[in-house]
Every structure is written in C-alpha cells, then in structure tokens.
Image (cartoon, rainbow, N blue to C red):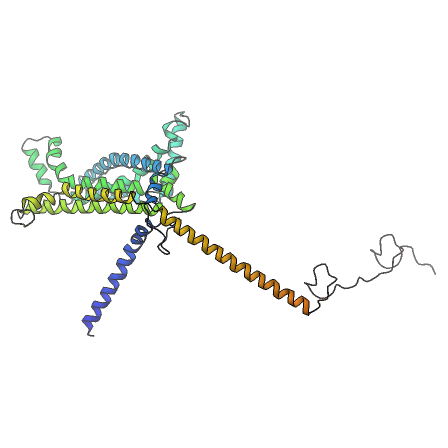
Length: 402
C-alpha cells in the first residue's frame, strides 16, 4: 500500500468517525421513537409502534410550553430584527472610533452569561414595578413579558451582526445617486436599501426565532411560575424520560429536512433564472420538470409524503405484538422465580443434612457466638461496705484507727 492509498484510507476512516459522531445520536433517537419499550433503547427490540407520537401530543404541559415558546419567539423576532437593523445602520454611518465604542456596547450582551441576564431582568423590572406602585399581577411580574424582555436584550445583537455582514457588501453610492435624483431618504431606504437587505432580514428573523426557541439559561429565571418548551423538556428529562422525546426529535428532524430541501430548490431555481441557464437546463427547460422542482411543489410533495406515512403509521396496531412480549416477560419471570425456589430448596436440604450429621454446640451468647467464643463468665467482686461501691477508692471512707 503506497502513501496515497494509506492517506485515503485514513481520511475515509476519519470521515466515517466524524459523520458517525454527528449523525449517530440522531439515528438512534429516530429508531427508539418507534420501539414500544417504555425506555428509549434499540436493543432488545420489542414492537414497532407509533404510540409515542400520540403520547407526545397528549402531554398538555409540553404542548402549553410549545405554545408559549412560539408566542415568545414571534415577539422576539418582531422586536429584535428592527433593533438589530437600527444598530447596524447606526454603526455603518459612524466614524471608526465611535463605531468601535458603540460596537463594543451593543455586542456586550452576547458575552454576558444567560444566568446573569435572567436575574438582572427580574431585578430591574421588579424594581421598576415597585417604583411605579404596580402590584404582583401587573406586567412587571409577568413571566411571559420578562422572558420576552430578557431574550431581546441579547438576541437583538445576533440580528445586528447579520445586518452588519450584509451591509459590508452594499455600495453606498446607490443611495447617494437616488438622493441626487430627488428621492427622499425614506424612498431611498424602501426602494434601494431594504430590497438589498431582504435576504439578511429573512436570515435574521430565522436566527432570532431559533435563538429564542431554544434558550434555556435566561428563560429558566425569567419565566417564573410559567414554562416554555425548553424548560418543560429539561424538567421532563430530570424526572425521567421516555421515547416521546425521541418522537419529538423525529418531528424536528423532519421539519429541518423539509425546510432544507425547499430552500435548496429555491436557491437552485433562483440561480438558474439569474444567470439565464434555465432555458438550457434539462430540468428547468422541461415544463413538467420545471413545475415539479418548483419550491412550492417540492414543499407540497414532501408534506403529502409525510402525511401519508403518518396516517399509515397511525393505523398500525401493535397491541398483539405487545401482548406477546408481555407474555414472554411473564414466562421468563416465572422461570427465574422457579429457579430461585429450587436453589433455596437445595440450600435448605444441604443445611439439614449438615445439622443431622454433625452436632452443633449452642453458644450461650445472645448472638450465637457470632463475635467470638463463649461469653466470659462474670467476675464476682466482693461487696464494699461503702455506700458508693468503692467509687472513690478501696476501703471505707472512715479514717483508719490504730
């Protein structure tokens, strides 16, 4: 084997280990979501079932947390994206020194631990509420509002970074030309800058929503007595898990794959239309294939396929298989109990034979001689004439007389 072949084998092995580490847990969770075992596992395999998806949907606390997370996530997007856009535009219009100072201030919330942000949010809004005389039922002590406010303080910085990256590619002379031609600053912003920032707006909205949805460190303090999706999941894992969490992983993976495929279809179609290669392409030049690879058609096909599989899975009845597995477990348990009875019986017979053949001298000790030989006989001591039992020395307390 030459050096090139050896290097290829090492690279292939490293790639295999990397992808196994990356996708191995996901594959395991997908498999455990369809095992009837009450504990997430692959082996031993019991029965194929889809009941864990129904268990997941039937968990009221988890579904309530999901609704709260969606509501908070949408609110964070609506607030963080405009704040991030304003911060990015402000930084792009400032001088180098002032820009560096303001950038440091705006980026600091990302560097602060989530625990500190959560506690400081509660302290700040609580003090503000007491300052205006608000009671504990007001918005200053509402977990949803506090979570929204706490997440916006650092998630808006994520949106700002996305807009800054996009603005670095913007040519400011386009806006200057529009202003020279008589456009107002608002028209220049709406007609030139905003269309240029539209990809960044979508990316920032998606990023801020995910950051809000999965946040735990800040939310666990600010949500107070309420719950979100992540805090409910953490509580469920601490108190005992079941394959319904694997079912949740399957749903998340399916949503991610659908979104990735639709986005890829949209990107390829836009690229083909932009460079003019759509007419020469075998796919986009064919009217039928052009409709099939359209992003909306791809989305409809994927959703239809998933819906069909979900319907077929819901019609499958695993009760017969589960009863067989239960009967096998009971039979195995009875077999183990019978083997244990036989061992106990054999031990008793062996002990009886030993007692019959050998006489065992009983120990006078109350513990059967477990701590040694026979108990020592008590030593008789002469009674002392002293009423204190010679506690203060031998003899009597009376002085000696010659």
